[in-house]
Image (cartoon, rainbow, N blue to C red; front, side, top):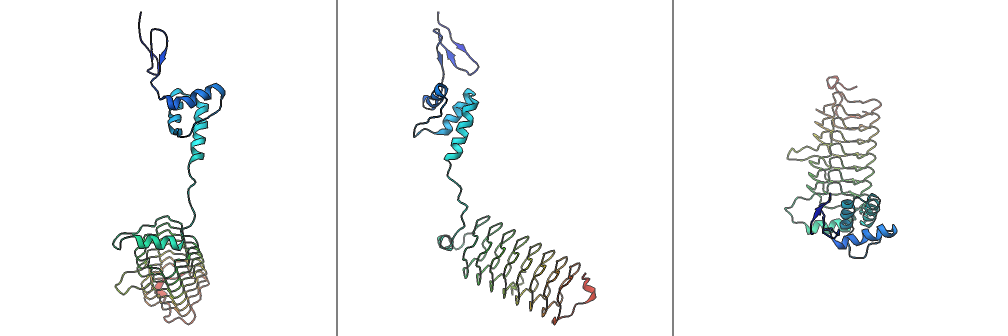
Length: 272
């Protein structure tokens, strides 16, 4: 007499009691060997993910753990090494002129990017720490939340740059130009600029609202019409600066140096 029984797996059993398991024999062989001697042995060319799915199907927990570890170890290590100048220049040359360049979150740490045309590039959250960006053209670049700590940006073109909440602690920005003739203002709101050297920079109309400039050197800077509301200027050297029409409301100027300023401060600006 012939009959077919269905078990919990959906597999069939014939009249002689043999189970008909509708699974891949290629992936089942490593499982069968594991059940025999407790060792995971997988021949070349067999996908470990396929074996893992079979192990999950049969509920062999100990084998599942072995396979997950083996798959993780077989994955190529992620390359977090910094991008070099040569690699980046090759990338720039291969990108059409009208295409938007997005370098968000990329690692350029320690790279020499000096004198490169980096206009309009999106460097949001990129690692640019200890980079050489001297004389680079960063006009309208997006450096929001980027790490520029310890970098050199001397004489860089920073017209219309976006550096909101960026970290430029200890960076050198001597002689930089933030002033855009078209009226587009550089935005460094909330940036960490502790100990930066910005001596002689052109920063007319710049937005430094609630930025931290503690111990920074701003000697002989043009800060005419700048927004410095809520800015931390503690121990900041502002000697020789032009602060005409600057908004210093609520800023912290404890220990700041204002000697030989081109424009005297007025009480109406409510500094503290």
